[in-house]
Length: 209
Image 1 (tube, rainbow, N blue to C red):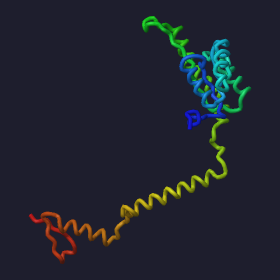
Image 2 (image 1 turned 45 degrees about the vertical axis):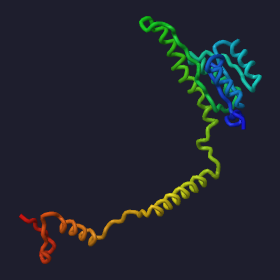
Image 3 (image 1 turned 120 degrees about the vertical axis):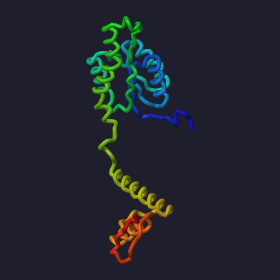
Image 4 (image 1 turned 30 degrees about the horizontal axis):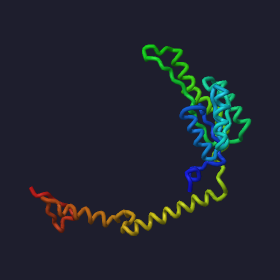
């Protein structure tokens, strides 16, 4: 069995943002090799086209230019995906930005640029893609035999637990009868250091002084 067979995701659809270079490109390439239909996005249209053509030699890869630093850009990418596919199994929010400036010089403009893409962009894109992601899920769409399998699994687990208890000689705890409880108390009192019992005193113990 080859690695591609072992980790196959054939028939799945994946979207990798920032997929034209670096880690994003490597992730996209791995998904393509594993059999998925991969969509990559980048702000640069020419980069999307070039990388999509390169990876398409190994499978299916489609580039969609998008600026994910704005809510509108995230919405447009989600709408484009919805026009092309009915389900999305994998979303990799890889697109990100850095600002190579010393901390003392890191101003509001730099901060907002990093925050817009690295935080807001992830939130907005995921939000807009929820319908496609939910469409690929299984919640509420279990087959008719699903509950039967759960019931059978529960019964098998219960039987296994009972076998283990039997092998260990364990028994479920029982509550002693009133007579047993009284006898146990008398036994403790009878053997308590410093006490003596009169057999005719009605069961009262006295402490030796």
